[in-house]
Length: 246
Length: 270
Image 1 (spheres, one colour):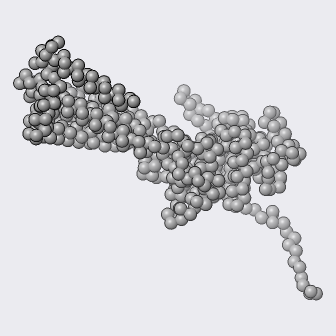
Image 2 (cartoon, rainbow over the protein chains, first blue to last red):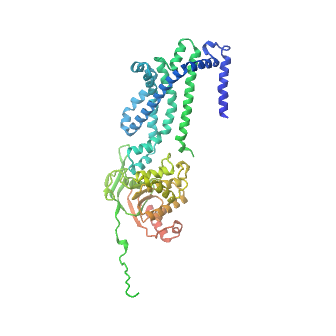
Image 3 (cartoon, rainbow over the protein chains, first blue to last red):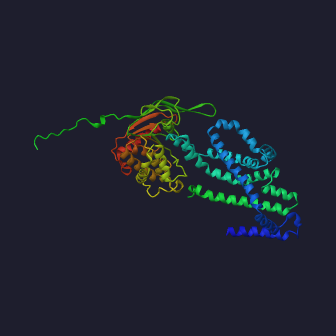
């Protein structure tokens, strides 16, 4: 039932856009769904769609993966060393608060206009999400559970494998959800600054040529990517957290 | 049948002393408070538990009895005094000591089998024997058929059975039990106490058990140590001579049982 309403809502919005364009406002500024669909169709057959989508997905995906692994790793290590955590806390929070989008020009300077600078942008966007969520997740672990494993003389790896990592799985999943959007932002911002491919680059190029249809086509693909990625997370989440079910 | 000689053993077996499993001598434990002062929690406690002995510490809640168990388990260090387990001074968790908390402390992402297997893994039981031992423990704890459930799907009493199973799987020589049935309703508590005695009868490990429930203490113990409010000191000791196996329902109407409980009540109120 909810599915039906969702489809109806989206169809309604698209229809309203289609009808309003050229009547209520100039089509030049807003383009319209039929033109965008036609453009995507052309891009699909010319190979442009695959090339730009592939570039953005690999930038965002690699950034998310590396940022996630690094964030969890740093979080797990810092959780074991509360003193160190306290000392570096202002630095972490400072970097976290910094609008990392502003780093893009520097990253292009440091890492070039290729894949690496975009991966680093995406990574910098998601790293702190994973780091802070991991720290918070470990903080919520019941001290008695840690003590219980200690009384059974469990080693550090055993505790990590059996207690710490499973306990932070829900926190990591939440981070992935937030990270999907942020890693796309990172990749696209990187592409806006300096690139020769990618959906962000395509949007930027289209805008520069006053081609609103092209810009919207790029945005549409980005939107679909975020939705699909989120659905994938839902699929992965269920088997990983089935123990929570009553 | 003339000439057959019947030899009667005249010396009672009770004279044989059993090896010490745990001993505490003049143990003081204090906690550092955030304001810099020190809160004495355990005030010069001397006690011992022999092999296969069931000792219960009874006293008001929050009196520091749990702290004593934690110190024996090597989780906290005393400020003064000496603790030994199997003759070795405690510095960090000693081997073959099982711990059971009032909370079940099961790992929620593992099934019943998975949680009990944690005990087998850490107790150094060879992998080849796991499956058989798991089935045996599930049967012993009346959990057969629940092996694949997650803790969230079990009642409080069943979760504590799983905790007990995990501890038994660990093969401890000494079981430290900190109000393990304290959060359960009265009937479940009695049922689990009965099962603990049944298991203890067949496996004969040493148990040091903390509770604030006097009847539970007397029903289970070989020896009851009565503690003062914080800082914890031992104010009385009772050797419980009630015959075993004990049935709680029958104990209730036993005047000897009632008089021991009464005596402990009086000591606690003094």
